Length: 510
Image 1 (cartoon, rainbow, N blue to C red):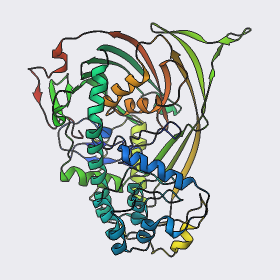
Image 2 (cartoon, rainbow, N blue to C red):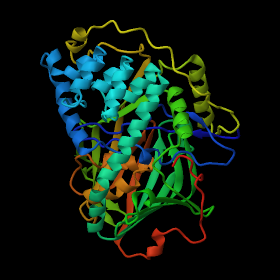
Image 3 (cartoon, one colour):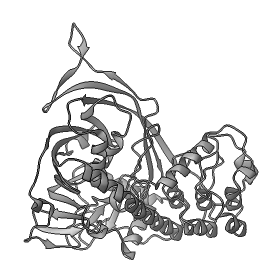
Image 4 (cartoon, one colour):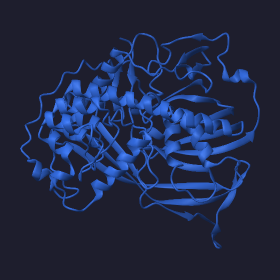
């Protein structure tokens, strides 16, 4: 045992225009870090956590969730008849659930935002949960408190249930990616070939952190349905970064299992990004989930406003200046609030102390190789006390005052106002929709995915050539689009060089 992996497991969620952004990776539902086993070979940390897992729900699931949100927001008095699936799951009535499951909407949310799967997990009704999963109940969905079924399963502490939810989440992720592929390829084909260069500059209000944060110049080449991204930032979490010379290639003509490849240009090796995980990798991920904080962060955009930024001392005027080659109008972004919550009722005192030690080590620039942190194989926790709340008490409780089900909460909440500036240019040749299609391909890089989420907001007119975005709760990034040109490239830049050797274990988390 010579090294440990940092896992920054967060969620990748495509919000609607009127909802919230900056959700952590739903598949993880964990805190900012966790330790995991590695072999003796030096390995990069997890850089493609978002790619293998869920990107966004399918169209049908999105429609279901929108319908469910209406249910969650209604102020009318609900009755058992409104939520028959929820009721039989709440009561553990597997036989009735079996008869309802083919004719009822199992993604429906009740007035507290819970789906039937939420209730089955929180109440420890395993047969109901497995039946719902067998019928593809959505795992990437949140209740009114912001928690997914996976988060609730981690709190409850049943290892088998956590594993089942994690596997289903990844299956739904693969299906979602495959569903979106034809539309994405069509959009790329219709888009002109171009070269795009953008710069990342990361900052933090945490003093120790600000000293170690990186910057990165990224180069994106797009030709036909192929994309190449060159970057020096191999891995970036909120407490750690790793530099290198990396190229990410997407070949739209290849079969899905061979579409994505990562080149390590320093070691001259490459690795294809696989979509399946081994049994051991899944078990290790479950160990991480069970030994880490359950974390939720939401950047609320419901009250967001944009006002023209001003310049000048005596005579104030709207700020307009060049960003690279593009003239841009500057705006102040107002009304963004970062709400974060952290749960740890499933952790022992030993877990909490170990996690704190990891954070302290990383904040001081240390690494885990010397610390010998190795999470043991986690066993299921003792189930929480049986629920004493009746179905009638649960379903008639006021909105926002749902009776708690499952293990007693140990939760910390915090809110932080987020101030940002955005520069919009009418001269930039690329449209936001086209940018979103490109970012959809390279969203496996966590910080690029945050950019993708942010630019989906209803922005002022133009293209965002410079903007501040929240990447993690303690970190923001200034993204600047410095250069853009329509161009043609040699096809060889989208292929693996002949002198590169395949190393399937170069990036163990792909």
